Image 1 (tube, one colour):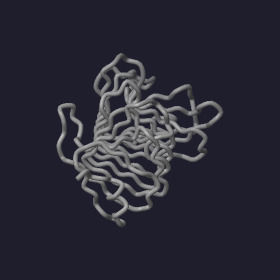
Image 2 (cartoon, rainbow, N blue to C red):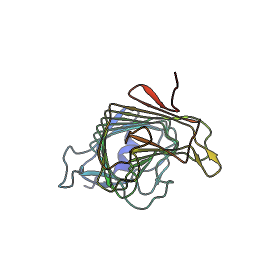
Image 3 (cartoon, rainbow, N blue to C red):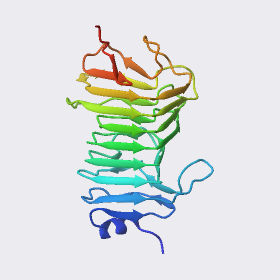
Image 4 (cartoon, rainbow, N blue to C red):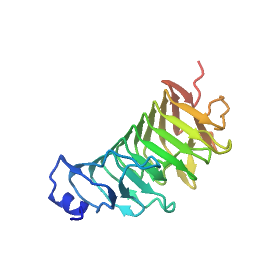
Amino acid sequence: EQFDIADAITAAVDNDYIYVVAGKYTIPGNTTKKITFIGVDQKDENGRYLTVIDLNGKVSEYNQNLSFKHITFDLTKGENPDRGFTHCTDLSYDECVFTGLYWGYDSSVSTFTNCTFQESTKYNVWTYGGNCTFNSCTFKTSTGTCINVYQTDAQTMHNVIFNNCKFINTGSEDKAAVLCKGKVGNYVQYANVQINNCTTEGAFKKNDDGSPLWQIKDGPWDNITISVDGTQVYPSVVN
């Protein structure tokens, strides 16, 4: 009998675990339940888990608390930000694999632990106003930048935190690993970026401070704060 993830969600109650067999699935939107999805702990020859969730379409998970483990997320089709999990309360990813471009999309809290963002010809992540924490994650890109810290019309601060992460660039030297934009169009961007015990590999472009970890786009901006290993590096602090 074919596993039906929609039926499993319907039958679940808060704090349930749904064990998802190998295959490719979409998640129906607007469930109000707190659920953990656990995939098959086995990868294919490309390093991807056999349980795949397709996030190329829009999944409007307002006010959700969803957790995932041992799952591959397919985001390879296009660059439309109006897709994936949007405006969620709490998202947690543990030992997951992401292919394509992930959009944070104004999520209150998104936590990624031991996740792999496979090589992308675009960025790995656009934060898009989402509060994102990455713990022991690996990012791989061929564009010169892994993360675009960015939002649209929100006038609130969003926090983007990297702990013990590795950024890999297989392409030419173009940008630093984390790119921060202080303004997009007429919209001012507010961001607090923390980079702790992170490393780079490959030809990332170094900023004026000699660091390949971060870069300010079209600055200077007083609405963005960046710290590295607990020390504020932007705006620079003069003693």
